[in-house]
Amino acid sequence: MRMVITAQGFDLSDALRESVRREIARFVQSARRPINFISVQLVDAHDQAVRGLEKLCRVRVQYDNDKAVEDSDAESNFHDAVPEAFTKLLRT
Image 1: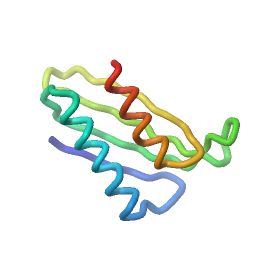
Image 2: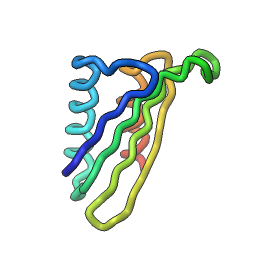
Image 3: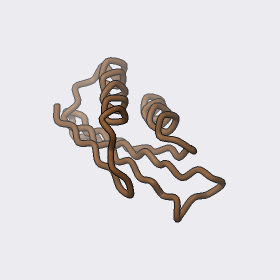
């Protein structure tokens, strides 16, 4: 499985990168389906913030059967946005 974690509008800290990796591992274990690729995009959208929700986490998962799913979440901080985005994906 390949994974890519990108940050836009800020420098990605080691602690946040590790937090994202833990969420990826949790998702992979919970999904119980073969996964080819996971992309996590973290965006500090302070210029485009709605109701103070300026930290966006967008996750895209490509399964072995070529099915792709994507979801996102915006919160006031990444430590809330990241797990919520993965939780939304588990519901699909």
